Image (cartoon, rainbow over all chains, first blue to last red; front, top):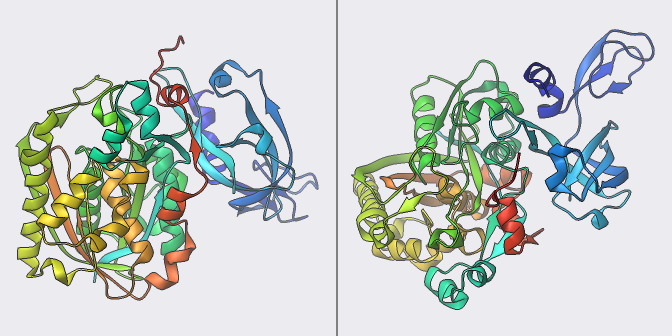
Length: 128
Length: 348
């Protein structure tokens, strides 16, 4: 990921900052400029640190940057305040995941740009 | 009154047992366990480093402090495994915590006592009314060369402490530092693993400096070992802190709550701070705690804390050290450990 894009996305990747539409109340994550209802008026809202697994899959053939991590799991998690987030679930084996299991968002390395590039950080989830 | 407003720790879930490392190198596991008083150690996951450990420890400290992160005026991280050679770990940590942009940031390095260096400066700045709160972190993903004695202990984890003048959990009553030029352990620029002076790391290094700082702060404060409920000393292995504690007049029961090394290993800059955090987890109002770090090179920082009644309000607001040590453990074989620690040479 180019450094400027990584830098722009820090609020959501680092701090799980979402945007709540003042018109219809829908929470957008990642934040967006225009809501489905047409409103451009948003207020900041943080995604809860905790949530549950809605669905998940296991990656066994991964893109190059993630080849050393296979098999790993990616889930759609619904946070305790109702925001749905697609995230890697780590520190567990794929067969330990179940729909409905509780998770906690944690701060982890997402990937590194080779041996000399920047290190990209963001959220992942762990089972609790 | 200046002291700790919030404290928190983080330890990875992955572990490797001393027996597994001994088996790999043809060593006598029982002799290592008995000699170093170590059972297992924490291992960082592939996606963990000093920055991620610092963020998790600091988030736990913020859960207990219950302050606005924007009120933190400084973020100082002590480590000897900062992920970048040029770009402070503190910049990422402060951004992740929501402390930026009005904040002073610096990374510290002094072998295993870089964390208490950060604590010393954070305390000093708050004492001098330069800022309302200051955050100090000691964290490491410690390096030890394959087959070296250090490999049995070098582990990963860290602890964070927010200093301030209100909502205090533990008042900091006295500080004392003791430092000399002692080449007992070092890592040259560009070297992957540190080197050490074998037995020279004992008496002329660890014991001289911890005893120097320990005796110095007791003399400065007019206190004696029996005036303390607990004491925490840097834990390069299980044996050294028990020996130095006895030399200073402390009993085993004063040391045990903070003696986390048999299950944690040596988290370098996070070692004595995490022992201190584990002690706060069980401390009560009025308890006196002595903390003495040690960093090769060499030096020791000593602190005397007095716990306040707020400890009962905050203790359960974040994960406790013993819970992290004793639950959710995932054991690795040596092959996976070598992969996780980047000991296997890969193509780009």
